[in-house]
Amino acid sequence: MADEPTVDVVVVGAGLSGLRAAVDLHQSGLSVAVLESNATVGGKVLSSPVLGKEQVTVDLGASWINDTTQTEMYSLVERFGLDTIKQHVAGKYLFQNETGTVVPFELGSGFTTQHPDTMRVYELLGGVAITFNDAEDRTLDLVSLRAFAEANTENSLVGGKAANDLSLNILGANASDVSALFMVDLIRGATGLENMLSTGHDGAMYLRIRQGQSISPMEDANLKALDDIDMCLPGASAIALGLASLLPRKSIYLSTKASSITQTPEGCLTKSANGLLFRSKKVIVSIPTTWYPFVSFDPPLPVSKQTVTDSVIGFHGRVVLTYSGPWWREAGLSGVMESTKMGGPIAVTSDTSSDQDAHYSLTCLLVGSVGRWCSKQLSNGPVGKDIILKHLEEVFGPRVPGGVLPAPLAMVYCDWNGGTTSVMRPGTAYESRSIGDRFGHVHFVGTETSKEWRGYMEGAVRSGIRGANEVIDEWKDGHIVGGKSPKSML
Image (cartoon, rainbow, N blue to C red; front, side, top):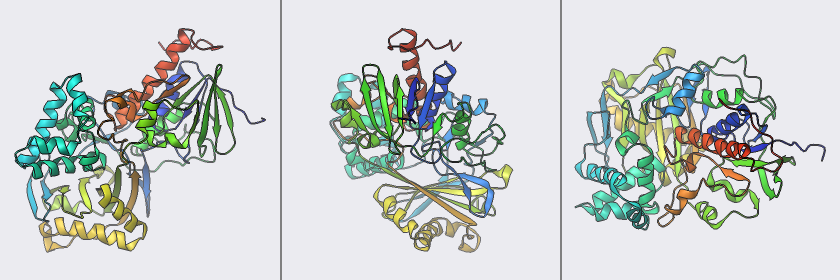
């Protein structure tokens, strides 16, 4: 074929894991081609301009990091000279229970609840994450998260609901569909449940990358040169764009979906849906596991990997509303609201403002089946917008002067069908720990494959480093037929 690129390594997917793997491979002296099905890089990191305010962006995907236990992400923030914002939490926190009653109280830096039965479930999961051994893990995998909570709380109904609320907010899936071990493994990898939920210094929601001035778009099937782009204020997408800027021009193929990966004794042939054929010694797959069935693997993936693809598909959606000012702060509120009301539709809100840029916004999280329903309404325009505003009015309205919320300047929405990570059913989580194992010439990365911070940007970056190191180590050891030696990375 005339158009048949040949490289050392093909990377399928230009999310954070794929980009980080590609950068490390390139810097070791290996040639790479990155195939991305979308028209931009970043995967589940997505910063979007606000309608009517072209110089302001909001984050619709992964947003939060910290500077202590998420070392790889923070090192990239420093490498690209990005500003961060501490998550605003000053003011009262609002909790709406299943009947619609709203309870205000002070928000600490740890667990965001004052309900003792819920705390029991949280403490139970945190303790198990520390104390259980391998044999106990196998047993834990056989029960659902909901069943585990119900069996270990005095009030099984309250315990089960607490587990379900936690599962929906973190995974976008019902606790009855989730392996108890799977949630425990997530907690282990995030240095504990309290840190997982915390806005404190070691918490998963401590810092955001400053949002503000938009950045230039990418063009056609290649990255636009990024040398002249102001990288100071673009939101979380700056990390993906920064990594992309470290790769050679024309090494990223946008709008190029991998349709098949064929392994041969000499390496791999990767074919794209738009007719390109890439030859390489190695392939690194960095797409979500739920997408594996849409790529034809020859030979077929082993049963262990096929099992993982039959995971639960959770749902997370984000609605960002921008305002002329932070009206919630003026009312003594933090902007944080958690709702377990039947039908919601909003599960959680957070203050995602950037005071330095005079940008004020609330980000609303939609989860599970209710989130899916609300997503459909939002796609219909005014109906969905009214549903969101009505819920905000119901919770916040009685606590602001005059009882009426100001109209938002703009609303931006994005749904992530599949949540932040694949969700393992009971009986599958223990075996899924091998999800990142290589298969012949094909290596697997992605936040789902990470033992640390799975489902987070940190997990994605760490997995990319691991995948690149696997390939580099094989090259150095001479285990690749016809492979040249990469240069030293020291």
